[in-house]
Length: 520
Image (cartoon, rainbow, N blue to C red):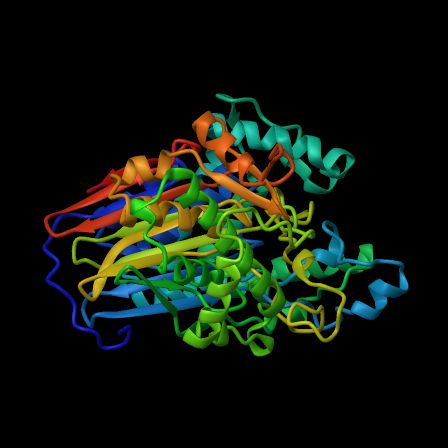
């Protein structure tokens, strides 16, 4: 259904860009108006987000994308995640007394894959250059931008979480106030170098050398050779179904299988006809089962076997597990999800009907708590485990478990919904909740994105977003769910989406973020 599928006719309706910051939306629209494709728009927007929302994304992070090519009716997927350094060693961390991989610092740094991914996407589906894509971001870093409310809030929260470690992030601290103007000359210089020298300026030039020097000085593992060896890859999208809708996610090392398995388990239940507390209870319990499977089986692509999780025989067994907790909250697993991070997401559609679903992240706010030449380095290595036999086991050249999920949902053999949600381990949970509201309840797109959400944390513990109906919260507690605060777990996510209707594009930007919908 992916390769060579026939598509319904897509009329020319102009283009659309939706993301979490108005300046990024503007950069994407400028790309479309200059003749660029959906990919040109998405990459330009993502580069700007690395400047205006620097705690969430950076050229020092990773990126994944789904791209619909309307000309040949084919869906493509790109894994733009980096690997552990060649010198990475689980044994060395165990010898230092670590039971888990460090959350911050040089041992958590993996090779950044975002810029290579942007370049690969543009070379295959773009009409403009990488220099064109990074130009608006470089200008904003050099000339400055006004700090928006949600970005200011998150920047301040990051400062509190990092404490004394903010010194390793250079000019990003102290955090700027809402409405103030922030400039970053060092980041502008790095972006200017990329505009002239392309990806080699980053992966095989002065930037890689600067990271190498800083890593050596601090006893880190990553080297210039790790940068030079990096390659992303085109992969086959992972496919599931919900109520007749093909749903597409990235395969491992992402947690996309969580969404597909949870939806498959919910398929057996008529959610539209159930009381709200029963509907939400089933979503929580289905997600618990799906997360348990993902955390056991998802890791480096060469070490992961997730197709078995979507096999009908296996799903039938898991459906019986769900039936066992049809009335009450399952208190297991008592160990829940790691602390979540944040991310940025861009949805873009051009006038020819091409579409791009792109997500990028440094994982935790300000990643590893390190910056080189204005670029924040990601801490994706924190998602490795120190079990050599596990798919997520830390080893040289392995890719870590990834929380970030660009998604597409099809109708009539062509994209219907281009969407994504940020928020670490909340991402698959919010995707399931949004899809159920759209497909089961028939909610309008903006209502589906804005509705209050739950977040499963561990065992019977859940967080419920302020604004959720108190009667629903009480009913969930009566079913055995334990209500806890969500302050330590990354919030309830921020979604961005485009619906492709027969005669129009419908966009929505989550009110939890600073974003907007832009159209040409």
